[in-house]
Structures are given as C-alpha cells and as structure tokens.
Length: 406
Image (cartoon, rainbow, N blue to C red; front, side):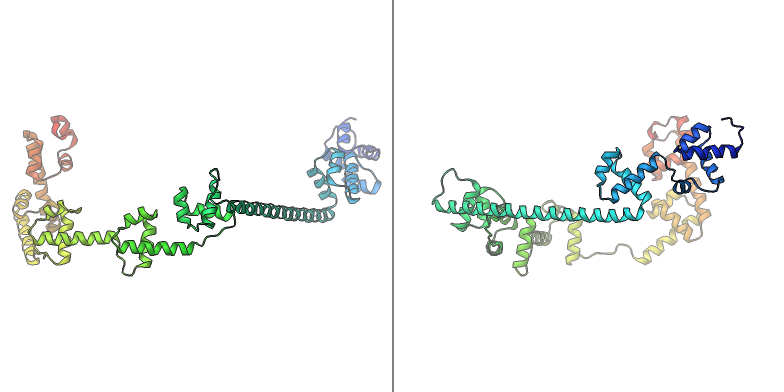
C-alpha cells in the first residue's frame, strides 16, 4: 500500500483486517505505519482499540491468552500450574491478573498470605514439639547416666570427666570452685556441665562462704595481691568483696600512699633535703615540696611584694624614657624583652620602645657583619636563634655564608 493513500480508505482496510484477527503490530507492518498510527486510526473512527475489541469480539493472540489465564485462576487453578502450561513465570501470571482483575488479585493475595502464615505457624509448632521430645529424651538419658554413675563407688578408672564432676557434686558435695580447681576449669563451666544433668548448686551459699574466708584472711594480714592469687579472682573482684564486707575498708594503694607520706615527713624532720627524699620515694622533688607545704611543714614565702613590683615597673619606664638600651635595662632590672614591651605599652611609651628596638637590631646586624660567632650573639642579646635569623634576614645570611646559623 502506497504512503499517498487516503486516510479514510486505509482506515477502512485497517478495520477489515482487525475483524479478521490481526494485531496492531501486524497491521503496522502490513501498512508500513507505526503502532501509534494504528491506534490513532481507531480513535478517528470513534472508538478506542480496546473498546472496539470488546464491542465487536475482536481479540488478538495475547489478550485471548490472558483471558484464558484469568478464567483458569478464577476456576481455582494454581498459579504454578498455569505458569507451567503457558511457559510464563509466576510473576508474569500475577501481573496479568493484577491488570485484568485487580479486585480478585487483592483477594487472592490476602488468601495466599493467610495460607503462608498458617503453614509457618504449623512448622513452628512442629519444630517446638520435636525440640521438646528431643530434650525429654536427652534428660532421660542423662538421668540414667547419673544413676549408673552413682552405682559405682568408687568410679572406674576410665570414667569421663563429666561423670567424675557429677559424682563429686552429688556424693562428695564439692563446691563449684573446688570442682573447677580439680579439673582446671572455671566455676561457670562447672555449673554449665552440672546443669546439663539437671544438677543445680546454689552459688549464693558458696560465694558467701568464700567472701567470709577472704575477709578473715585480709584481717589476718594478707594483701589484696595475695588474696587474688589464693582465690583465683581478679583485682576488682577482691576489691569489691572487701569494700562491701568490711566497714571503713582502706585499699592497699591508699595505705601505701599514707606510708609514703609518713616517710616523707619523718625524713624532712630528720633534716634531709628534697632531692634526697625523692631518691628513696617514687615522687619528684617538687611533689615532695608541695606535699610538705600542703601538710603545713613548709611555709611559702612571697619573694616579690606588690610595692617592689611597682617600684621596678617605674624604674623600667624611666630607663625607656631616658633612651637607655634594651640590653642595659634587661641586665640591670633582670627582665625579658616581653615584659619591657608590656610596661612600655601600659605607660604609653610604645614609640620610645620601638626606637630602642630598632637600635638593638642595628647593633646586632653590625656585630654580624664584623663576624661575631653565634654563641656570643645569643649570649649578648639574649635572643633565640629564630629571632636572630629574622633580624639578620635570609639574604644577608647567604651572602656571608654564616654556617653557625644554618
């Protein structure tokens, strides 16, 4: 069919072919137009493609198949069987049902979910019943084993570890700690083994007896470290037991501190220096001095009084006003450049201080040119190496090849 054919004639032919059962895709190939053009032709004729099919009974291959699938599901056929029959996956069957019968699909989905939950519950009940049956059989077997163990007195040489543990717990009434020591296991592991055989040893009575013996040993002179080794307990466990059981309990480290304090006081009263006391004590000499000050054996003397400080400030300000060099002021007043700068700002002498600062820098540069060594420069001007480098400048240092400063 030529492309120049008139649309009404082509539409009539499309309608005739559609009645014969051809799909929109087949019509598009036959008339060399797109599928959209086919649907547009049906709309021009006054009805949609789907509506036209429903009214006139015209249906393609896929819609017919989908209708059959929907009818089969409504009749009670399972989705799995339909998927096998039509060679479509289950998700595709669900998509067809969701498209053509959405309400029925919702009902079916709810019903399937209900069945799935019911099956899961039944499986859970079955597994729980099986577990109970298995546990009952295990308990019966263990009881029989305990009865066989208790018949022998003493136990045979080839008896298992668990059998010997059970015999010790029932016959000899050993505690968990004693069983653990004998078999080189923890108390918790011994309790777990006995629990498997239905034997429960009250740990409360055992722990109370142990705590009483720990407190008695501590009062008899044993230290916390010795108690840890004796009862196979951690440092924290021993500390907690002693703290709860003994009133006014003082830990070992606090006792040690008290002994050290007493030793420091005795040594100081005997006339020993801070350095000598610090050699025999694990503390620095400054801590020894602070401790003696805190205890009241050493009185702190204020070396600088406020009136002395005010007088020195006044002298420094007068020297800056008089134009004396910073080196001279530092030597006579024994102050650094920072303090001089702070005093100059407070007294309103910033410009005078800057002039003195420039004089000092110029003098340092002159000494550098003359060949003064690095050590002498630092000693004379009381400056850091970094400050000297900044004053002299990197270019001058490279020119003079000042090796001491590199």
